[in-house]
Amino acid sequence: MNGNIIKEIESKGFKLSALQWKISVWITRRTFISASQVGVVSRALKGQIVKQLGLPEEHVSVVLNGADLTLFNQHRDSDGLRNKYHLDNKPMVIFVSSFEPWHGVDLLVTSFKSVISRFPEARLVLVGDGSMRDAVFAQIEKLGLQEFIILTGKLPHAQVAEMTGLSDIAVAPYPYKHTEIVGTPLKLIEYMAAGKAIVASTAPIHEIIEDGITGIRVSPADPEALAEGINRLLSDDELRGRLSANAQKESLNYSWEHVSRQLSELLIGISH
Image 1: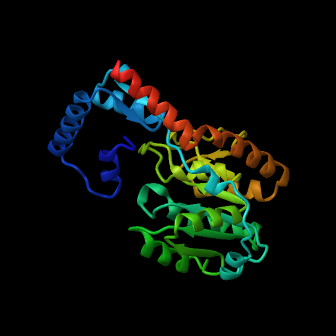
Image 2: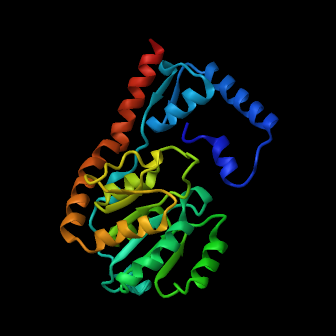
């Protein structure tokens, strides 16, 4: 289980009636109870479904997501991409994700207005596409940020890795204060593998980032807090370098090999 699909449906603006909610919970619980074991991708997600669905703790196992670390931790000559997007040697902040409401791309765009007031040379690169793309375009124009924000659209995975490697800071915003969309975003693991200084939220979805160790965590749904986290890293080379190194080291715990071993242990346990 990669996320709480009922909450994600509501986050897209589809409000379930009381009867629809009750039926959705019943179907989900029936499905999970029928399984020998339920695997989830984060500790927060386990806590959420155990509480919401009344599942026994021992019926749910946590196996965190993994990523292709070698794709992101190799050095590349990326002059071609820098030239293509007119980045030169400007400080670069990157966001990689689908443009869906729970990923907070609009929150990030708002925050970048404050970033460029302190660091006018900084550039924000948004990699991805989704239902909010047109709204994000309009927001950028309304805030007068066309010169400072680059939208690449959806890219092949190898180019995502190349763009991430160019960046100085990688960002994972979260737009809700009272709604918990939980999981383990692959972008966090890929940011870590690339050795990037990360700004993430204090929401449970970003639990794998340890504040002050592998990144900086800031209040969710707060564009000024997000801007302050980015500004702090842009102004502190030593901190940025230390967080980058720690993050890349920590990423080894999220390799496909590591996750495969965990899954094998889980399946062997079920078979016995």
